[in-house]
Figure (tube, rainbow, N blue to C red):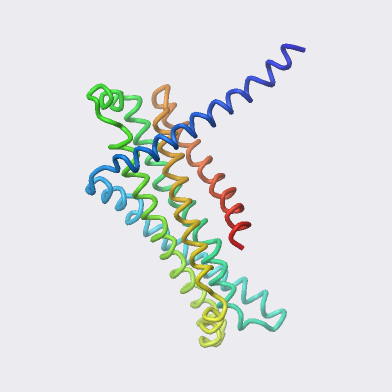
Length: 256
């Protein structure tokens, strides 16, 4: 019986230890973020890496997401004779849910994985140990710029996603399906409120924080050489994606 409890308890203790270490990492990262946010140049470089270099994938994803929403929405609404509400359906779906979530998932796959790999390689090549030996704070030079950049870049990318997605829905609904353009735009104007935009922006900021936190943490505690880097990168992408979806549900339930 004791061996059974030991077999079942060992993974649970390991998970709790990992969670505790992640929380301590988060608290220390936040403390260093306000105490020593770092110089502007590294932050701007990270904004360029996370934000500007993700523009193309965000643009493509948003365009085809909006086009699919326009196509499926028009097909569904014509069954009830309410195709004039297509603009409302596309805009609200993108602004409240799909824009923040899909933008965050794309950034996780493109930039989050690279952040984890970069920090992980610095860990296994002892560059982080060298910083600590020289009495230089790794969080100031490595973590803080990435966290601040993600908090700035994600809302901007989410806004671009919403605009491009709505334009994609307009292209399909109006230009291809023959919907009245005035009905499409009027439906958006009547249904979209400031709280919808605010909800999407709050989600995008929180998703940016989750991505930077998880990816920096996984990279910082990388072990066992190249295999450890690949494992940390995979774990970071999977964990960030799952946490984004879970946190999205809780935020949606609170901000309805």
